[in-house]
Length: 176
Image (tube, rainbow, N blue to C red):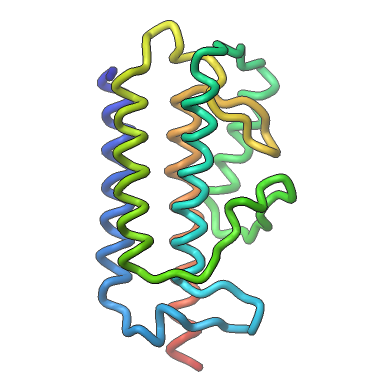
């Protein structure tokens, strides 16, 4: 694993640990609080994050041998998607990504799945050959192909995006 990829992986790990540490301090009713009946709870948000990482890196593992080129326009659209994900702007899950919608679950199960998917990500990064580092590993439904660096940047930005959502939920649950 290159030092850059290790650094990117360590960043998403720190983000995950911070989120889980923060949520661990929430009472159970706050973790399950929904501001509206169809709105997501904090558990739903976490489940979505984990499912997104699972889906993203499952695609990456399957895609690795194909060595798909990433076009300039894919890179530019990827940068836009990453920028949007780093902001508090609310975004709907793309229609092509319904597999990442949340389901009923609990915090220990989510934490366990998140740890497992992070081990899979680490193993993928360890196995990545230098000639594959610029190839398309993940095809985002909006931006197109992303190489490994952009995929990790997206993972980080996606997590950051949902931290804003968790902050809104925490504030709303105090008022309700």
